[in-house]
Image 1 (cartoon, helix red, strand yellow):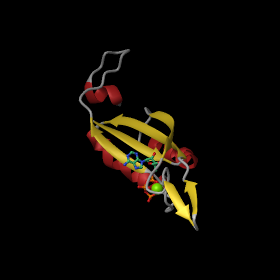
Image 2 (tube, helix red, strand yellow; image 1 turned 60 degrees about the vertical axis):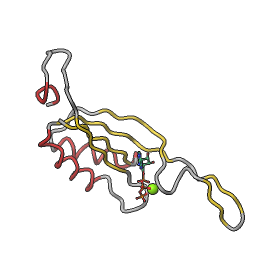
Image 3 (cartoon, protein in one colour; image 1 turned 135 degrees about the horizontal axis):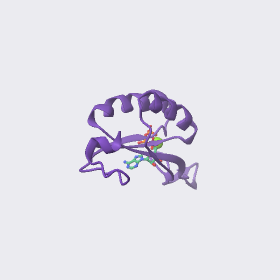
Image 4 (cartoon, protein in one colour; image 1 turned 30 degrees about the vertical axis):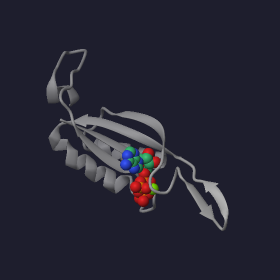
Length: 113
Ligand SMILES: Nc1ncnc2c1ncn2[C@@H]1O[C@H](COP(=O)(O)OP(=O)(O)OP(=O)(O)O)[C@@H](O)[C@H]1O
Ligand SMILES: [Mg+2]
């Protein structure tokens, strides 16, 4: 299993959600975050004046999935979360040791289906 963490623009969420549903991804967590990439969150000087670059509002999606679903999810994100402009976000992938569905006590990949 892997955890896919994707930082995306809030405005692409509806489209991404639709794409994920088509790939059979139903379980996910969303957090509203403030973030900065290469362009935000630092001080810039323009024509002698100092400007504080703002943090941007983003959504963080977290999905724990079977290994076989990782590439289809990446494909959805690259297709539906992209505008081509700076600030489109990032995808991080982590190994997951275990998952347990509390209600049924199911363990492993079956718990994240
Ligand atoms: N290295 C990082 N670690 C954790 N979060 C990050 C990292 N880089 C970006 N983010 C998150 O992703 C959001 C969007 O980043 P962004 O797409 O602007 O990255 P970038 O590297 O500046 O790429 P681009 O040049 O395309 O804008 C940030 O607001 C932040 O929340
Ligand atoms: Mg950026």
